[in-house]
Image (cartoon, rainbow, N blue to C red; front, side, top):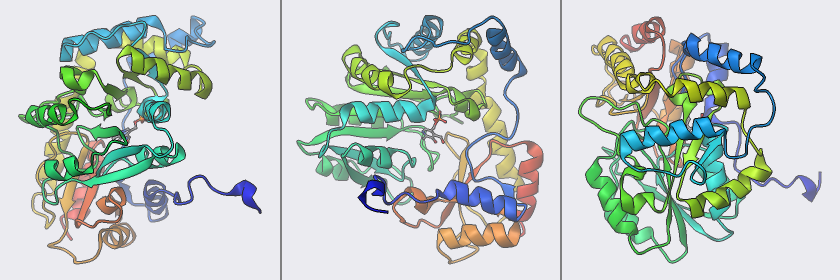
Length: 381
Ligand SMILES: Cc1ncc(COP(=O)(O)O)c(C=O)c1O
């Protein structure tokens, strides 16, 4: 074929998530690689969706999302973070957080604009920047604790920096940015036109003494931030692909122009269901406790193993260092782990331009039985 099929994303192959899941199937392995729960979303929420369908909410919804849902989102953010977004002009419901990220990058990144990505990072940011002709400026998080190297970050800012992408709680490191770090970011961006794209999909999954500090809670960040959220992560239904973003109205106006030509609007009956379900805050307020029990159970099950790692601070991932077991690179070790032992995990280097920290990411959003089956194998290594 000629130039008609010239790829816009020449470096995108099969993702490691697909590869690991295929290997998991082939070797009948316990799959702790992909980031989704293997238990059901609340039956009540399923019933709310069914009811909305029966009640006839089956045609196009408004572009921004139905007002009842936008109202609940605004109330939730105000209660938790103290910022009052405008229901009409500052909230848009999206097809999951991934689409919110896509909209924000597409709305603001012009060819040649630089976008700072803190690495390791979730895998959708960079291809989306590339598709829009932007230039990814990777900034490595510190080797041991994944904290931000502020001097390094400062040295990467330039007059063409258009956007900085932040993710807290962070996938894959499972760290949570403390308020002091969010304030440093506020200071760093002061006086610039840089847009902050704040990926907060794990906002409700934080453990121990850690707290989530949303960009929406910090005035100097909120005024430049597009904050992205995911119902899929929060309500155990990643397959529904529902989420939203909030941003000051002048930013949201541009985001909606992209939404208009991208999907126009999001699934109507699901919006109806979430607008009811969000009226009961316990569903998201109890999430941290729910996942902390799973994290603690998983860590207790593998406590006698040769894997090492600091307990996850947030997200439903646990990083484990395997350097006491093997000197192999993380992709090789992860591949051997599935083929010979029957457990899949994600090698962290795939989020980090191949930089190998000898760590694997395990997802503990799984039933007790699945965690037990995995741990039984891991403690023998
Ligand atoms: C950091 C991060 N952002 C965004 C997403 C995607 O969220 P959604 O499923 O709502 O598109 C994920 C999913 O793994 C993620 O880990």
